[in-house]
Image 1: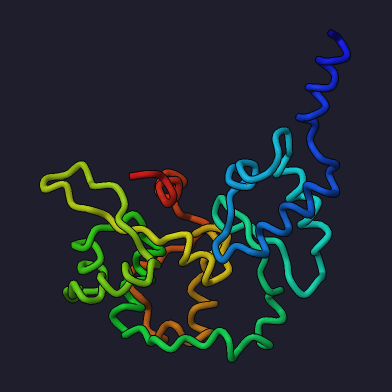
Image 2: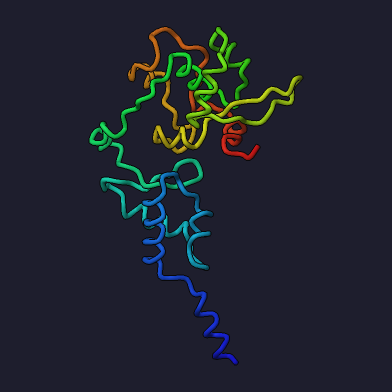
Length: 212
C-alpha cells in the first residue's frame, strides 16, 4: 500500500527547474502579449514554480539580444532596448496620432484616473469623441472606475498594451518633463500640469489594472 502511495505522488512531482525554465521560455516566446505568473502556472504541470523559473530565465537573458521584462503584472520576451534601432522597419507606425490624441493620451497617462471633463480642463479645449474612440480602439486607454460624484462620470486609464508598446513596467516609469522636451514631444512652453511620475499618489496608480 505504501508503495502505491509513493508511486501516485511521483506522478505529480514537478519537473526539474531547468525544464520549468524551458517551459516558461517557450510560452513567452510564442505569446504576442505579456503573460502573468498565474497564467504560466496554469499551463505548466502541477507543482511548478513559474516565478522561480522566470527569475532564472530573466538572469539567463541579461546582456543578450532579447530580455525577459516585466510589463505591469505580466512578463514578456522583448528586444534589448539598445538594439531597438535594428527593428526600425518592423516597428514603424503606419497610423499617425493627431496632436489632440497625443495630448489626450499624455494627460491620461500622467493624471489617471481622469474624466473627460478633467482632460478638457487641463487641455483648455474640448475633446472630441473621435479622439477618445481612436485611443480606445488602439487599446492604449480603457475605462476606469466611475467617480463617486454627481453624474458618476467614467474615468480613463492607460492599458497594459500602452505600457508594453513603450517598454514601461508601470506608469511610474513615464519620462519626466526634461526627457519629453528633449525627445521633441513637448513644446518649450510649460505644458498643462504634467506631474513628475515619482510624485504620483500610490492610490491612483493601484487602479491602473484593477477590475472594473
